[in-house]
Length: 128
Image (cartoon, rainbow, N blue to C red; front, side, top):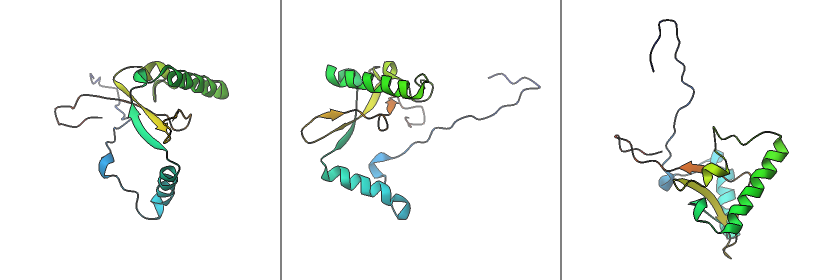
């Protein structure tokens, strides 16, 4: 970015990298998360990151329907600039949060569906 004499620079965002393999929810602040994880385990619910484009047509359609319901409920378009929409989720470089039960019945969730774009590690060896 070119610095003009009368321009000010403002930071608007910052990436946070989380070591998911070693993530722990300790103390009182983590109790709700621990309880939810225990309940999900008892109910046989599994969460994983997958490529939506590789999922069966029924799952892709379920995601499209949920997205349209969310848009209809809010009266606003998808917030593509923050989380992306269904079109971005169909990108092979994007991972989608999927939940399934022991019976392998996948579920999409309006609240639980987040997409993450897989990126190549930067020169510092970190990826986001």
